[in-house]
Amino acid sequence: MSEKFLQVKDLVIEYTSGGQVIHAVNGVSFDLEKGKTLGLVGETGAGKTSIAKAIIGVLPDPPAKVRSGEIFVEGKDLLKASDEEMYEVRGNKISMIFQDPMTALNPLMTIGDQISEVIAIHSGDGNTQEAKKKAIEILNMVGITAERYDEFPYQFSGGMKQRVVIAIALACNPELLLADEPTTALDVTIQAQVLEMMNDLREKLGTSMILITHDLGVVAEMCDDVAVVYAGEIIEKADKVELFDYPTHPYTNGLFGSLPMMAVGEKRLHPIAGMMPDPTNLPEGCKFSPRCPFATEECRKGEIPLREIAPGHYCRCLHAARKETPGFSASAVSEMVTAGKEA
Ligand SMILES: Nc1ncnc2c1ncn2[C@@H]1O[C@H](COP(=O)(O)OP(=O)(O)OP(=O)(O)O)[C@@H](O)[C@H]1O
Ligand SMILES: [Mg+2]
Image (cartoon, rainbow, N blue to C red):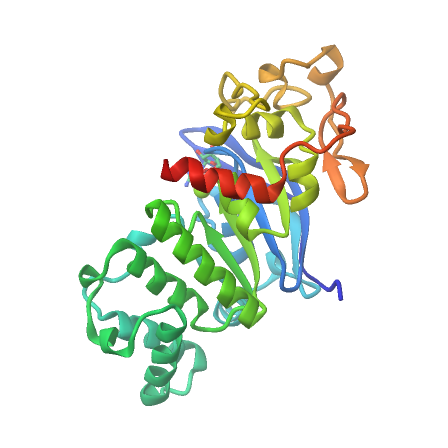
């Protein structure tokens, strides 16, 4: 059944800093069905974290301001919710694994207490015995034995710490998990283990997920749908198989071109030269046009629409056409990226 759990519509987020306005998110829209995983991909500064923080209501205001848009969760607009309502949402519906997970734990508190505290706060009944029991259950779910309940974060390796962070995020059984680069800080083997664990848990609990990453290998393994973000806009989105088979936007093709494994294949495309535009001074028209080898005069003016180029496949480019033959398959990318990293 295709039930939309989350709908983000025309989200616009700005930061004000040093008298300048940073146009971080510029009209982002997407849907997420219950139980599905959406990958948000894009290079640094694209606006990925800002989108996630807006959804869970933790954008720092100031300097951040949501200028416009709607974020519906089960039909309710979170941008219109009160602080109390958002507190409820964060406790019961949505949780987030933040980008810098290694600093997310309290160094002075045992990992068991950190998990049961979350459970106790959100159950609200003050039953610490019950919370402890549940914390041990969750620790087991992320592959940590009950004996380690009374240990402190410094006694854990990076991968184990990240399992604890995931356990805390899952402690109140959220319906939506926002995972911001959850494994970037880990080495490749541990990363694979943690991702596999997240996938198993997500399936078991039926959690919907937004997975933020710059790693297409992670997308290939974990996601159902993919949205590519560039300069605060979604420039391409489709289900994963379609996107990997038919990457259409020149920027998306550039992302595939800069994968390490492509260096050995004949499909090598050159990584795109140049940088993302200055978010205080975005170019007219297509924001990728200054870097795009195919840009023409008309790309540099007006609003470039997100066109549906195949059923469910959207691309924000005036010129790009979906190829006749498939390009990169998701499973091949997943295998080759893993192999490339291990080499
Ligand atoms: N607290 C802040 N104050 C001012 N500007 C900010 C703040 N947080 C983010 N920005 C700016 O907003 C834009 C989007 O940042 P964001 O962190 O959402 O990007 P991102 O895609 O998550 O990047 P990364 O891959 O590096 O995590 C960037 O230009 C960034 O510099
Ligand atoms: Mg980020």
